[in-house]
Amino acid sequence: MDRPTVLITGTGSYLPNKCLTNHDLSLMVDTTDEWIQARTGILERRIAAPGELTSDLAVQAARQAMAAAEIGPTDLDLILVATTTPDLVFPSTATFVQQKLGANVIQIPAFDIQAVCSGFIYALTVAEKFITAGSCRRVLVIGAETFSRIVNWEDRNTCILFGDGAGAVILEAGPPSPDSASKRGILATHIHADGGYAHLLNATGGVSKGAEEGLDPRIKGVGFVQMRGNEVFKQAVKVLGSIVDQTLAASGYNQADIDWLVPHQANIRIIESTAKRLGMDMNKVIVTVDRHGNTSAASIPLALDQAVRDGRIQRGHLVMLEAFGGGFTWGSALLRW
Ligand code: UT7
Image (cartoon, rainbow, N blue to C red):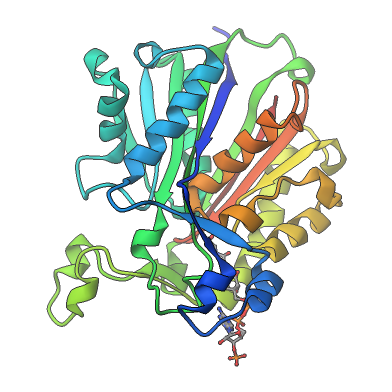
């Protein structure tokens, strides 16, 4: 039997109201607007309100995506939430989202995926497999984070980088494609991990390790983000080019065929370097890092939704998504819109 295609039929996103500018940060730690802009490209980021949870951000983005796809919560077969900042240790944030959307009445499966900044690409990859295997017809895939809750607001190396937000897509099974040239939807995905780099980027504490004796009581539980930024930067630049090439080769396209690059938004210099390696002009790259900062698993679906809604990404365009994050984890996905 021919496998169905996997179409993105709706996108949505949500940003909390509170905006934290570089100037605001310069009053909190020893930094300047000039330094942050020059080294990262970030101007401002959003911060979730007290009591506003990752699942709340996720639900707002999901509602928009469902409206765009013209479906309701009971049309879904599966909910995946990519997050590193879940509401609780358990149950999963996806089950909270399912309940808040009212999809619990049909008792569809819901679970979280943890791959830090690559989480959305990981979740997209998993969802695609469920659809091509014939297990699901409609999957809600969300990237949602409240990274502000695990940032050490006294550490200038990291607190300037992160923001909160959520983005979502609806994936739906489409008719099998007669040939690869006319195929729409997800064309190829690749994901990787190398656990040998955890020491360069991690959050201190945690359930099992955080309960060990001798840890600072503040980092028992969730802990704080810590990063050797320069070393992470070099590795990100190195692997992002090769992962994009891998996904292009698997689907028979060349760098020149890509209409839009939607990268993970960690640092404008990493984004520029990947674009340069692909020979892409920056006006073909969707950039939100200036206004959102690094929203981890939410950054790609947030950027995608922005570019779909403002009309840059249009039907027929070839779109490359790529991400790199803690683990290390990395991945890419090629789509025909
Ligand atoms: O999303 C997951 C993946 N994450 C990433 O991809 C992030 C990758 N890393 C980066 O984006 C960059 O490495 C940073 C933006 C984090 C740092 O930029 P950098 O150009 O790599 O700077 P650096 O870490 O080499 O630090 C340069 C200097 C240091 O001072 P000294 O030792 O040269 O005197 C830092 O102490 O900048 C100093 N510095 C700051 N100065 C002002 C570090 N943070 C700040 C700050 N304000 N906020």
